[in-house]
Structures are given as C-alpha cells and as structure tokens.
Amino acid sequence: MIPEPTSQPTDFIRAAVAEDLKSGRYTRVHTRFPPEPNGYLHIGHAKAIAVDFGIAAEFGGQCNLRFDDTNPVKEEQEYVDMIMADIRWLGFDWEDRLYYASDYFEQLYEWAVQLIKKGKAYVCDLTPDEMREYRGTLTEPGKDSPYRNRSVEENLDLFARMRAGEFPDGARTLRAKIDMASGNINLRDPVMYRILHAAHHRTGDQWRIYPLYDFAHGQSDSIEGITHSLCSLEYEIHRPLYDWYLDTLEIYHPRQIEFARLNLSYTLLSKRRLLQLVKEGRVRGWDDPRMPTLSGLRRRGYTPESIRDFCARIGVAKNDSVADVTLLEHCVREDLNKRAARVMGVLKPLKVVIENYPEGQVEEMEAINNPEDASAGTRKAPFSRELYIEQDDFRETPPPKYYRLSPGREVRLRYAYFVKCVGVVKDANGQIVELRCTYDPATRGGDAPDGRKVKSTIHWVSAPHAVQAEVRLYDRLFAKENPDDVPEGKTFLDNLNPNSLEVLPMCFVEPSVKGAAHGSRYQFERSGYFCVDPDSANGKLVFNRTVGLKDSWAKVEKSR
RNA sequence: UGAGCCGUGGUGCAGUGGCAGCACAGAGGACUUUGGAUCCUUUGACCGUGGUUCGAAUCCACGCGGCUCAGCCA
Image (cartoon, rainbow, N blue to C red):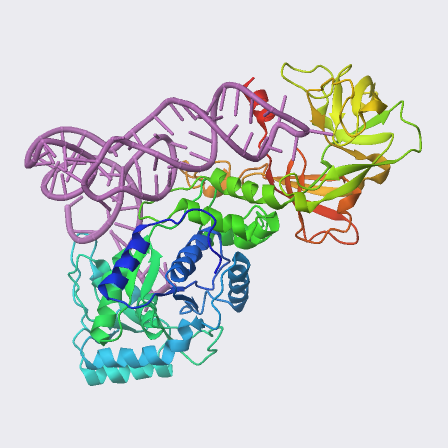
C-alpha cells in the first residue's frame, strides 16, 4: 500500500491495535471496509477506507472489501461496480479478498437455528406497530412479547416456514431473546430476520427472509477472521449486541472499535440526501464535480493522493467534528502545485492589439512547464500582434494597489515582452472591447536590458493561435457552512448555493493543450487548477476548475 | 427524568502527572518573470467548580454542554 505523505499519525485506534498485539489478544491485524451498495462513495468513505486499509497495512495485515448487502430493496449492482472502481482509484487494493454478506446467508441461517435451539431466539408475530409499543421508550422498559416463550419446536417450524416463503412481508420476525428491560434499546429482543419477498442483486429469489445488519455484521467479521472491526460512532451502542451474538454463538470474536465519521464544512455527506440531489436534478449526477462523491471529486480534478493526504491530516478520534473544506482545498493545491503543467488560459478574454508589432509575425516564446519540477521541461508559446488577456487584468481607472494594466501603464506579458497600454477601444455602449498597446522589442523574454521593472506579469494567449474552450467554474454546493442549519419550514435545499456553477463558453487556451486527454490536469497560470472534463469531444475542450489559486489581490479588493 | 460516548485556539488533531504543540484558516513581512509557489514572523485554546498531588489538559467527584439509540435501514 501507498505510504502516506505526512507524519505517522498515532491515534487511539492504532494505540489499541498495538496494545492488542502486545497483549496477545490478537496475533495479526485484519480489517475490512464494509460498504452497503446503495449509493456512491463520498469523501467520508474515503476517511473510513484510509483508516481500514491504512491501519491494516501499517501493521503488516490485510483489509477485506465486503459488501454489506442484507437489504435487497435498496441495493444495486451498479453501486457495487462504482464502489470498487472508486476504491481502486483512491489507491487501495483488497487483492482477492472480495466478499459479500450475502455469501454468508446460509451460514447465518444455521446460526439462527442454533440460537433458537439454545432458547435464545424466537419467532414473533407482533406487527411493526405492536413491536414499537412493546419496546418501551428511552426511559421506560419494554414488555415481553406474548410470543417470547414459544417452544423450540414451534420456533423451528415457523422459522423454516418463514424461509419457505409461507408468510407475507412483515408477518413475522425472528428475534433474539435478550432483555426487554435493558437500558440499551438494541438489546430489547432485536429483530434478527425479517420477511422480504424481494429479489437480491446477487442471490436472486433464493431467499424470502433476510438478516438485519446486527445479525450479519459481526458474524461476517467472524467468518473472515477479522481482528479489528472499525466503524463509526453510531454503532457504539450496537457493540453489546455485536458481542452478544458472537458470545452466544460461541464463535471467533473480533473487536469492534468506533471512531467519528467525517463531516465537512459547506458539504453534505449523507447518502440519502446526495441521492435526493441526484434524483431531483439539482446536480448533473453522482459525478457532478460539485458533489463530494469520489466520482465527483475525480471529475473535478482532485487527485487520489490529495484525498489520502487530507484523510491523514484530519486524523482519527471520537469527537464529533467538522473538518474545514479549506483543508481539502489546501491538499489539492499542494499536490497539484508539484505536478500540474503550467499553461496560459484566458477565461474572460479582452482583445489586445500590439500596434508596433509587425503584422503577420509570429514568435515562439519559450515557457517553463513547471517551475516546481525542472524535469517537466519547456514548451513554445506562439506570440503575435493580436492577443487575448484577462478582462480582470485591465482597469481603466486602477484602484490603489492594483498593479496590472491600465492606460499608460507598462506590464510584462509572461515569457514575452513588456507592453504599455496606449489606447482603449469601446463600443457604442461604452464597453471596453479592445486595448491598444505598444511593446518594447528589447524586453524579449521578459527582462529589460535597462533594468527597469514592472509591477506585474500577466498571462496572454495569441489570438490567431488560441484554442477555444469551455470552462466550468465551481463554487461550494451549499452557501452555508452547515447545510443542515435551516430555519423552521425550510430544508437543506434552501441552502443550495445558486452560484455553484458558472459556465464560461468562450475561453482561450494556448495551443499546447490541444487534444489533451480526459482527466488531464493543468495549472492555468495565475488562475487555478483545471481538469479536462469527459464532455470534451471532437476537438471541443471543456475544463473544470478544480480549485483556484490563492489570490491575495482578491483579498485586498475584498477588504476595501 | 434510561443507556452509551465526547468536551484542548476559528477548524481538525496531538499532548495520558512535569514549560500546552502541529496543521489548516486569519494577520504581518521577505522574495518573486504566476498578486502563484517558497520562506520568516505573529494573533489565538485546556467547558465549569471542587478534590488528590510539590505539580493536573491528564487522576477523582459533582455540575454544564454536545452527540448517538425507541427501523422488520445500514
């Protein structure tokens, strides 16, 4: 497995695992990542994957991939396939250890029978409503079900007939006989099996009863010889039940340890609501670049390395916490800064004519591909009399501290010449449509022999050589730090950022990027990191902005 | 008013009886052919009250605050 780039984090789970090894409670480390195939993986799962696979690797152990597919009505093969692709993309490998809880249905059934024979499980005929009443409340104990003391023979018979499909959905359940007065509601005779006449994506119509999570998970861990079953905090309260099944069945007993799931500012990480955004068309799909799904982040241009780095940096603990999305952004910037080729791209073009530059002349200017990586080499960028620069790089009346182009002011065109603005052309509405400039031939390459300095260097693209592209600018999907923070009567949908997507159809990039493959990542100098979207086709380029560069001018301007 | 868990700068994570630290964010500066990157400086925290101790973020007690659980979801 890939070693994480940042320092070795030592957290309470690693400490517990090390202690278990030292004490001899376990002699090896074997974990598992157990997704339910009912949605796409998101950045929160990336944390869990990093914990499960990461800890196993660090201790020289293994990590299984196991689909927790005990609910056929919610689960689909499409999700299984995408989940596997996402985990691989993230950089983790379960080798030949791909399992499904549904692989164990027969064994689980036998164990259920065993529990019945031990007098530890019974078939219950209570309706869902009745069961709720009998369960009691958080502060009051429950009452025993009237079916609690059926004979072993009757239970065996009924359970077999449940399996045979003799009863309709919901007519009966198999329940563990534990303690209806327990302070832990999970122990008040939890349901082990429910009747579901539904086809399963793997077992087809083989089963009419399906085990619930609690009756499947621990035993699946046991079957696979898992040592440390790492899961999120909400299962903490299930641990006594996890332990009860294993102990009562008298089978190999893994240790469950819980940690806090990831929350991210300005982001929703709930499969249910992510699904809702997709189904209602609020986004273009699971892989919309604004989605926190791994497929969305991938399409947005995030690297797996940056996501792993992020996971390493947020750490693992039991505090409910909200990680700052700016840390995630920092992680991609840091990674892409080292790796992304620089290129010049003009998002909002303003035409410039260099009046004293010979018509028809073209010069090939040498440009550095990546100042952070000398091995990336150089390229040629064509320069000519007519160029495009960024609208933002010109102000007719420059505010204080604005160093870029303005009438009479000289700036450097990166890798080319000093130019001075000598005229502004406007249309009938007074809109600036073109700049007239002069250049100093002595400054070729960007340095003035007389030693004079310019305050600013701006990027440009030669108009006749420019490659047209569509650029999609993304902002946070939600306008609020906590998308769930809504006033009475509103929903998280009201916190959607109406400006989360801005499409710029008429951008110009330098010709070196022509024909770039889907997924290629670039830094557009002074602008940000961009990634070629799969919508690019037939020579038409579409870029997604992964993340902007830090912009200290924007800060100055904002504070004014 | 049941059971379980958790409280350290704005955020996340360390510190497990001996000078409270790291990262991100913020502020300031240096440098710069990206207002990028890099480098330097800097603001800022132990939920509260008692107790034990020479010494407490750490151990104990009592409070306070937050989260999870009353699916035949996972």
